[in-house]
Image (tube, rainbow, N blue to C red):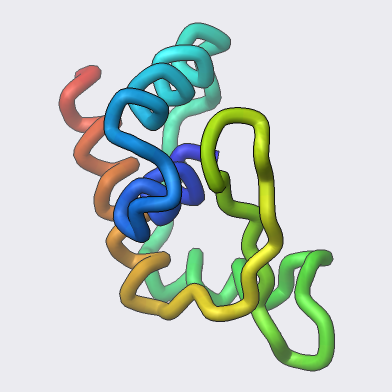
Length: 94
């Protein structure tokens, strides 16, 4: 969820303030630690997600508070940036 939120933020679909509020709420519920797997493996796993159809990767992103949308154009670079963001968050908590 935090990676998708970061992609939404980078695409300017949510404001910085909205993203901060949502991230604070997600972190309040103490999500599990980020797995120690390679980014390549995570990209591969995203390709096998149940939301995907006919080889098209689908992501649920936020377009403002309470407004989720399904998009089909998230690039590998955006996914990798979201993964990097989560890794930085994980490192800052240690």
